[in-house]
Image 1 (cartoon, rainbow, N blue to C red):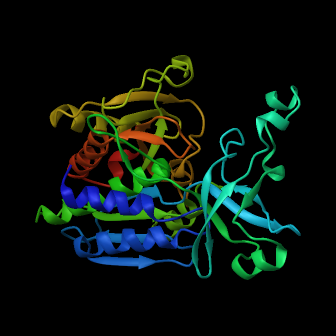
Image 2 (image 1 turned 135 degrees about the vertical axis):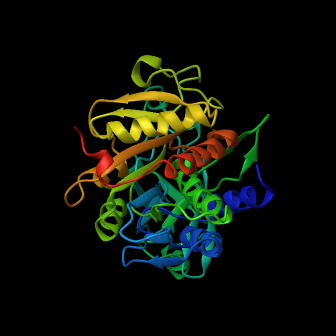
Length: 357
């Protein structure tokens, strides 16, 4: 991977961005894409919308989107001893949280803490087999009492899991937040590749880093309404099934390093799917497939039904260990996803070609 691109990816992943608290990551996204775009704006929701103008007038508007928000926690209560109780932001697994290092994002900056856990020696046999509910778990920041804790932390402060970008063997990397900063990264790389090619496309291209996807596809809904695109491509992550404990019957045969995934189903415009498939074949980009017989649960879903409807596709990155602090991807899959989207942009000729006949 290009050195500058990898540095951007690491910086993006490091920036905290639980749903509703995305701006540290959005600042990183804005800084990276601004030199490669004709216009960059931020709306009242916090979505960052970058535009690369095409050649001509009344061109098809193409929107590509990845969401920048990640799962996390939010402080709800501080007890008399200075321990912080919290709630989940997005789909947090209560199995995984005890014993985790965390960062509480306070007005004065990040504050280190740990999620406490009763020692196994002090637990009854039945309790050892029970998952402690999130509402009963707590963060220890080292405060001696409530008064001291309240000087450092406010109710409502966001919390992220402490995680570092880790290089595994080959091109595999692990971090928290690949869901869906992997998508944001691909969106940014598409903008860069298009602008740096020096060629004007026959489309107006909008790249969006959306917010609040994990709690209801909110940023994807509002940004699509604003842009009013003719075509929408959502870049997301999807469950890899090449780890030992995942059933292939659930999500098909999907592996890291075997290329981006194209979804098929009611959420996907058939002509746009075929354009992507053809582009992959012509550019010799390996692709994988998954079936999505219902709504996909991604920004692609709300894009499709925005205003009078949008021709929508879903390009996904294979991901192991979703919603953990060690989400794992292949860097090659990220690069190939960007290449694929750039290739399909050059094959779009009109707004009308996506209307079923």
